[in-house]
Length: 313
Ligand SMILES: Nc1ncnc2c1ncn2[C@@H]1O[C@H](COP(=O)(O)OP(=O)(O)OP(=O)(O)O)[C@@H](O)[C@H]1O
Ligand SMILES: [Mg+2]
Image (cartoon, rainbow, N blue to C red; front, side, top):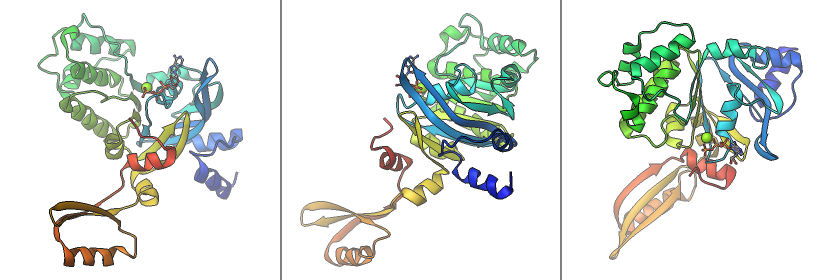
């Protein structure tokens, strides 16, 4: 296939369920940590993931942003081989998931919503046990220090708070020094300290070159952590780009002005791009006492609503 041909496919990759030739698919998989093409999954005739395609480059964080029931966990389960796509194909680190699942699983780390930890064991015992499943010896103390659990490392997990268990789950996902991390809403419902620890670790892993597939319905988190964000709604990817590009392309910036009109506090939102805005600002400034004035950028949530007609909550 020519470079020009590859570029055409690369340009639409991520949004277009066009079926690719075997040769083209293999070429696209090279240097990509994850390639999902046209993947689909139904639970008893309920289409949960509907022919979606995307790739993630090595060392990239892809935020998979969508509301409850959008299909995030189902997609993640297909990517790690827990569910078999009913259509389409997946390659991880250049390997076909159907042929090389064992090899792939040795090189990935997974953190799920469900906590599959041994609650009667300590954090250290948990990590050493999971490392032994990979045939690895690890420095469990160092790993626990990274997730802020040094002081409680010998305590039984049953006594841990939700945030502590989740931090341990993240440490667990790292025991085999994975090249790709799959994190399913890792900070959902956590206290701010635990959430920050986890976000810091995600960025540290990215710095080391690790690729991250991160599902979330927190638009701030997706914005802060992701190199690119995919919007998923009702099983389909409706947009996929960097947070900045999404905001520039689809977000309207506004100027918010609050001013005192007689005894009333008035607020106006003026589109920054509109030709009429400077004139209106002059009018307000000359006629009223202005309380404050500031520009606001569209959020990923605003843009998500534009695409789907629904919010993330
Ligand atoms: N085991 C199952 N059996 C039947 N339907 C399921 C099952 N798991 C998920 N679904 C349905 O598939 C759709 C996608 O679910 P999924 O769990 O992938 O969404 P999600 O984006 O992860 O949502 P959440 O934010 O709530 O975790 C939903 O309509 C859900 O009800
Ligand atoms: Mg889910």
